[in-house]
Amino acid sequence: MRERIEYAAAWLLLKTIGAMPRPLARWAGARTAALLLWMRPGLRRAAMENLHLAFPEWSNKQRRAAICGMVRQLGWMGAEFAHFPRYTKKNIDRIVLLDGFENFASAQARGKGVLFLTGHMSAWELAPFAQALFGYPLHFLARAIDNPRVDALVTRYRCLSGNLPVEKNQSARAVLKMLAAGGTVGILADHNTLLAEGVFVDFFGIPACTTAGLARFALHTGAAVVPGFLHWDAALRKYRLCFEPAVELVRTGDDATDIRESTQRFTRMVENYVRRYPDQWLWLHRRWKERPPGEPPIYRD
Image (cartoon, rainbow, N blue to C red; front, side, top):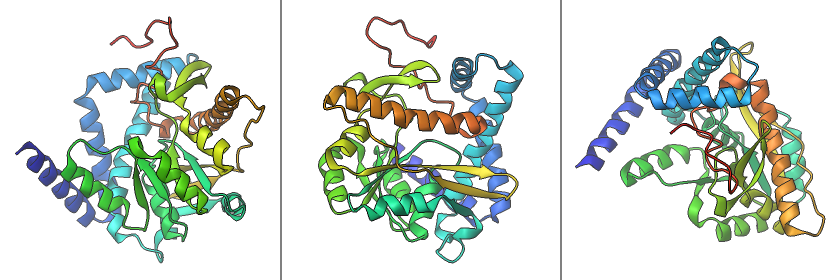
């Protein structure tokens, strides 16, 4: 019964917001996101703690402003997601501008596949969706939502532009096959990872357990790792999907060193974007939850 209720609520929300004109939908999304965060004091506290760690020189006023901006971005992403059925190859350029696409094209031309390094910036769900509408579909790693009905609904929206999902916990063989065929795989690489699955690298000067899978795939296959981040450009009133040159991997001959140092380079790319657009990154996530052996927890709860 609970699964059916959750599915009905998710379906109704998507249909309601999706039927609104886009400006109204984005306004409603931002208001809804603000209300939901107000109802979750633990998440607000986590965001403030993260901003204290990343920007210790900031005032609380600056941190609150960044959180307000982040909440607005989350609400807008909800509205964009609900409008996915309306976006097509003919109108996507009114919403998203490609920037530095030659970097992606150059990496793709190498013929060994592309690993699309990205993070939870702005309306991150829109980035792969738009990329597919521009003519370059990809596979994306995603962890299944607990409610299978809601998961199927969300997956259907994500795949409307031609992308295909890969279950995150069963991804290794599938990703290797896709890269061998010259395909593109998108990986969000900016969240806390369990110690068994990651390596510790610096993120804002603090050791953060980060997925090692991206480096392992790249080092094993020779696939290019191309950073691609979406952000809202207030001057243009559009999103920019920015592609950076492929990240050069570290190859010393020692697997552990190569994985750790390459992962550090990927994480530095994420940090650079977060520093440029601090009000557009997902600060709600406890990024430094996993600690090196022997270190005390960072968060209070």
